[in-house]
Image (cartoon, rainbow, N blue to C red; front, side):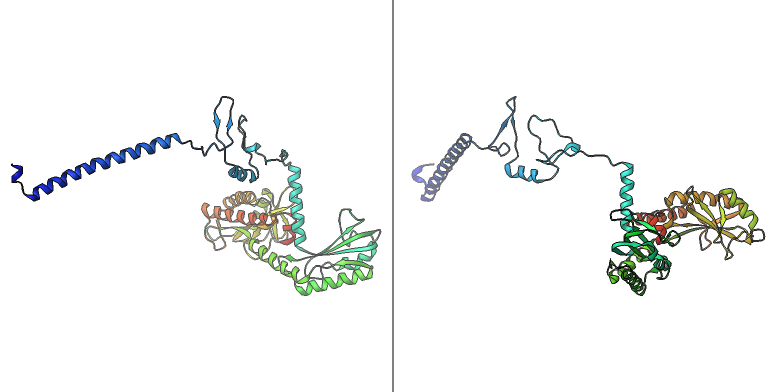
Length: 398
């Protein structure tokens, strides 16, 4: 095509195309030059390693050990029981971790005697919480003979009262009873203790006031001083304790009744009971006791007539009941297993079947649930520092 024959439009488009191509080439060249310069500057600049920090520690082999920053180091050192290992040190075992700038602590295993002592101390605290205690101190010894009248009023306030005496300041406390008080000697200190709760419920405010009046009259008579805790607070404490006791006051009963509606004879029941280790005692039941004489469980008549030595020869009944008093028995789950073993023997020998109070047959799963519930009750008591079968529990659940 002849250039001279080209139109003005075609010439303009060719010029614009050349300008665009040249512009792109120039732009690419400038971008490449800028990136190359930036990269060179970046590699020439020296950056501080954030892991190493300013104060680097170099090990013997020349290796640089990473360090925590000062602020983070201070945070770790502020935590008790954490010590940071230093380069060259052996790894620290968790059991040997110590607090910084502190003397090494030696952990001494707790002996069985120490555990018993701690448990006793806990029980003492719980015992003091179940009594309203009046502390009495005399300028001179309080004669034992002056205690006769207050000792006689042991059951005059709706709940048991017991008195403790201290022969001299700092001496151990001893219980004083009307039977053991010979009227001789004297006491540097006395404690009059009114029990706040038993199975009949909490002490009344009236009884608390009457007990305080008696103690005040006594201290005036012997010219002594006494501390009287607030009676309203004591009554409120009694109500709370009674509510807890009511929640764990459970009797586990396992019944054995005749399969065919027949009757068991008293002679056969007695022979089987005595052969199994039960003893017929006052109260209308056969009791099964441990080596220390504590009742573990009892065998009772399923019907209303109590067992007695006089009626066992002529008595007939449609069933017997094994009873376990949960708050008064130590190691309840183990004792329950023992009771269930004997109940199985009785059931087989008498030709009966195990049922609940609704005369519904007991299954293995049902028995397991009873045992689990029993264990839960005793765990709650232990958590409250009133272990089942302990001295405090025996007083509360009398």
